[in-house]
Image (tube, rainbow, N blue to C red; front, side, top):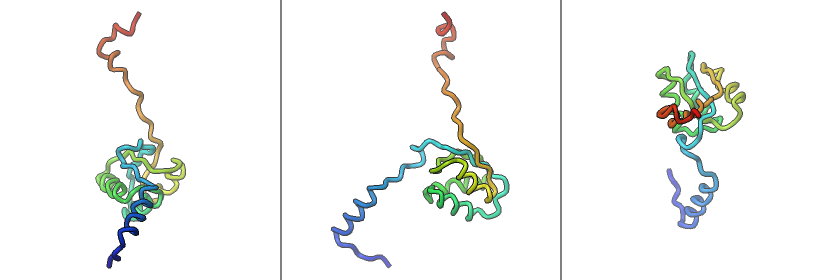
Amino acid sequence: MSMKLSLREALERAAASKDEPLAPLDSVAPNVWIKPIDIPHIVALAKAMVGLGLRLKYAHEAINRLAASETIAIAIPGEVGAIAAALEPYGVIVTVYEQEPAVAMAGLREPDRNIR
């Protein structure tokens, strides 16, 4: 049963929650690749991801994609070694996410332009 709050209490709670905003998953650069191997307890993996600081919404999305045998790139706060140690017992392989170098599109369109 929910408890009714006064306007002052509601505003205080709203102000307190603004102190620690959570960035959406799309705005945070991924730091790990997670590849499913054999996930015996998918719920335990989701709980471990949430325990590492991933929002429940994104843990749910990640679990759905891992269950479909997709390798995913995701941002989980913390050191990659600690993330790997925490998640690998649940049947996944965790590796460092390395972004491919950006390609100079002008050089591809006009190859003679870069040679002088």
